[in-house]
Length: 296
Image (cartoon, rainbow, N blue to C red):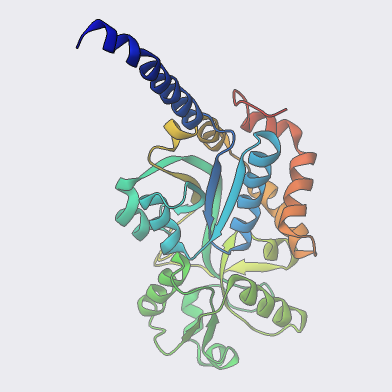
């Protein structure tokens, strides 16, 4: 190529290089992007995901899109990149099958809450203490041989199906419903002092508002204490480093979560409850956002 042709093309070359730099800079910045958070419609995950959304938007200036799905699609969405992250992975037991299936395609960002638990829960006034007690004919009759469950596909539903088999309760019906419907049925029965068994988990506002107990699980079908993990799609750290850093530092307690859940159950919208909690817990939020670029 001769010198005159090179000189004529040089402005175009520099323009292309400049555009490339601008594009790279835009991709590396968290500002202006949209973070897609997947979650299941459990009261606990509604609370945590709305708190994360509030911090991302109010402190980091990042737009958030919330994707409400069932547990399977939630995990699949993170694995295939159609969602960016979730703060709703119950491990090691409840979501074990999803971790086995999708774990290699997902980044485990870390534990965001310790000391969770799942199992069959009943009002404390019921004179039973173990899942084995459900085999008693009088108990079974009083319950119409029915356990009130939540959404099909939830890890706790799979565990309960296994529990019915393990404990010889195949004549029981595990009623599929939703988290909200289950809690509503529990509240109605509790108010009337009636017997009921539900698929339960903590943290949950129902344990704060009602005197409940877990049935002992001698066969350890539900496993012991669990943790809730934050999961992210691969590549999020490179694409949105500030978002990833915040998510890696997001850690709170069961009591924190229950405060938000109780407000929502009491009539506040999830957005209002999350905003109020974030504004009232500045020190903790500052820990989550330490070292993260802020819009403020």
